[in-house]
Length: 334
Image (cartoon, rainbow, N blue to C red; front, side, top):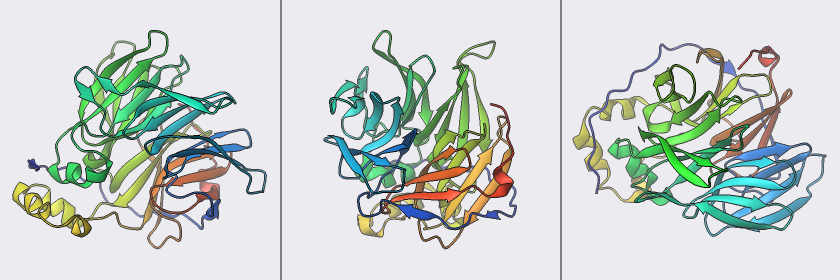
């Protein structure tokens, strides 16, 4: 059952995108639905769709190490050095992984009377605090399409304090909370709202502490993962383009209520097209790359290491890799 809300999200002015270029696919024999990635030195870590946390070598071979197997699907993750990793595990909670021992513990799976339904993405501050999202406190991963069709803010952003081992809700009423980037100085945090076509900024310190503002809105697609690149730019992956049909039914709750009566196999699905935005620290678009007929698609996360881009994917096989276009080789500050 859903209770759709009437919505009318803004749309940014159309502009021409730059070509994304061809993506090389790595580890396609051993990696399926590897949604997020974390790179430390020559090692790439990712969560397999079957519940395993895997480590691959980037030195040119297919060496694979299974570190641990979760009960749920690992989504957002970040590896710290060669000993610890933080992982958002669907249906379990926020996991702290001991990479040496191959074990993990769930440090939090709820807040007050709210059990996390779809713990999604995370970023770790320099202090060690973990900022993570729960995409929806009403619908789980199997029903996420209903969350989008209902169009209500069931998502939230949380902070796990590693010193006190406590969980705090720092921002709620988010429209499918997804990617997270925390400022290295922990002065603010950015969070993507997938079904709101925007990224919000929450100030954590200073005169604006606890205030929010729109970092960018009216996006031409559904924002998924966001990350801070080695060049200081914020990278945002759009998991699917925004369609005229969806914009048409947004203001009309009855149309979306009718759609939910269809069998799940008939519900709207993401369009196979790639689009990636590079943003400066004011939310302005520095670059916009697109590929409407990609061989590797459903890009959900991006890591930029020097001039190499690595991509995670929601449902494809493998990890994407490409050399950054020359136009991206300008640096900024964050």
